[in-house]
Image 1 (cartoon, one colour):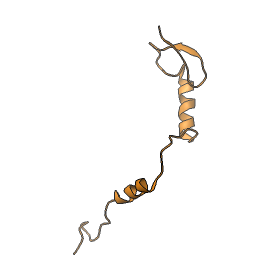
Image 2 (spheres, rainbow, N blue to C red):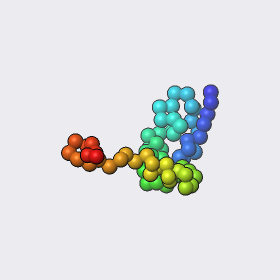
Image 3 (cartoon, rainbow, N blue to C red):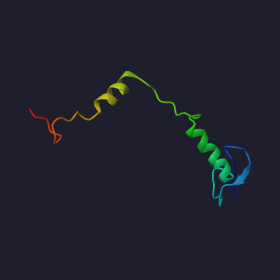
Length: 72
């Protein structure tokens, strides 16, 4: 049987059959979720000029006219 540690509190628990895995309890799951929502965890991503340019190019064109088509 594989035993793992809860990433939140460190309690040892069996991996198989644990309804809250990888956490030991609903409480630890919610504490971890709260940390993500409070932005205490981050996923690093490189910020370079190319990725900023791609974001601007992906924006949809502005609409004009009543039907959303350009008039010209």
